[in-house]
Length: 156
Image 1: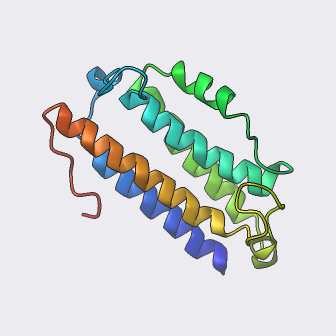
Image 2: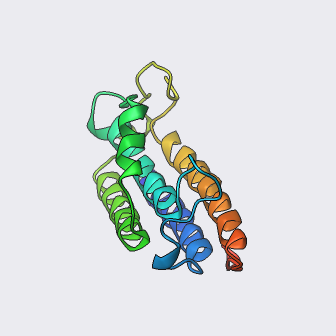
């Protein structure tokens, strides 16, 4: 079934992300290379938030919540890497739970027309989530190097 492959892709993407941030610890939570950029904990929490956002927009709600200012405001409150990692793990588990309930027919239904992947099959959000996660994984690898740490090879 399609959902098994999608769940595997989600798990792989999450595993790669965890490998990259393994070198970061709680004392790095508030590090940001420059004022106005997400901190380490905010990067991780934002990535988790986006997993929830994609799943909710495609399968739970009637479209995507485009109030990005609200999403950023929520991230600006994040102060703990430990908490952000927990939120990410929960987002992935919740996403898997939603995907488990879907049929191939559900996954192939088109997303609502609109500015976010309008009209493409809903299953395409998993690839978009993986791409978004990779983007932030790369940013966090740079953050780690700026902190004098060497991130683990994500695919190992």
